[in-house]
Image (cartoon, rainbow over all chains, first blue to last red; front, side, top):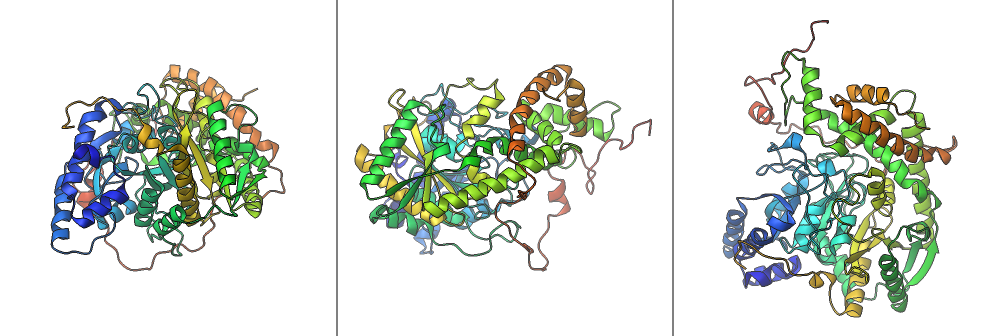
Length: 509
Length: 99
């Protein structure tokens, strides 16, 4: 029973819960059992909630009493550790915040609770979301459920691995340069980076404030849409939150899955993101071309579009992000929260410097010092100022692409999951993993990652990225659900169902 | 080609309040040099006629209604602090002897 429950989508669980076929306690227990059975190997979770079953029991009681409940009430969800939670530690994957329990909930977490979802626990991530492999977590890496010797992507490898390993049906992630979409690609799952300002950042531990967005992680497009509807919308506590109201993403996804949304759709293939210059794995390019052929067969109009300045996106990103991060991470000062390393006879500045030396990992130090350099007097115009100009050029490229196409597509990542340790000693090689996802963050447009099959050479998942104009999130879900259905028809089932079984220990499966 | 020297890394680390070890300074000098050379390519297209963008979706205002909210209590604000005296954060000396 519980082994079957963990393979259901959030939408399917919701139907069963509403019909009284299963209780939230049963669903939650099934996922806790699965975590106990496989997370010793996968290490998707940094913390498992002690309150999940009690919260589920309360939802069951309220449902029995006839309370009006939202669609996802009683469905368990995993939460990336970058998000503040009142009842669980929130470390952002850093030693400097070990054990810190925030005095408030992130707005997205408060909205999950209000919609009566069941927080299962906090998921692993690269420290302060700096990385593409989860290897920069201070608490050890997460492993890819498809092959435990490989990375699950990053920074949100924990959330992606949790849904891919059936430890949770849905999760929250955050995406600054691809941290939702790239893990989705390498774990065969779905993830969405909403339009900048579409989802509140209040209570999300900031990495780069002009790039960060919180978004959903799932195995199906509809599930991502259902989560988006719960967490999205204006938040007066986030000054960058877009004030207008949004269409229902779930309605858009349902429309896409059942209608003919692809007929006449102008699908733009971004020349600079298709890997013609090399560096893309053969199986990634092959699956991408097959997907384009399927889309054309379904009536879509495939057009080639050019974004010449995307070539400079990674360079601009690795100036803007470290600059903003060096400022955001100044708050970890050993005074108000987190770690303090005492220095005998030292001043508060000595203590601060010793604390940050001990509490930050290598990648965080690298980026904070790079950002400090980029913002220094005498270098600001050459680096940070130039990067901001590239940002304008990238926005203009998007404008010209969207004048020719309704939606843009590319592979989500240049390769399938690589081996743990493979790129750890080469920061620049690690940075290039995000070449396909970074442009969307720089321009603020929404992006979705969804699986498009397995690479023939290694049997590992390959991701498709969709991008829509700013505020076009609903279109992303409509088209994403249509493509998901098209691919499943062609391939005889969903990618996630092909994941190899994991060894189980200690659980009740 | 890079302008990143060990002395510069040491100075930046002081500005960023990170007490790097000598080994870290050596390693970061090489790594940051390579990264700075790579990111400097932004200068190739950042011509004077291009305006800078600091924010992806420009918004104006962004003010909340001016109504009293519920701030953290003193206990909540101090709950995560490494040291406090019940009403204030406690730190070691602000000024060194030479000051």
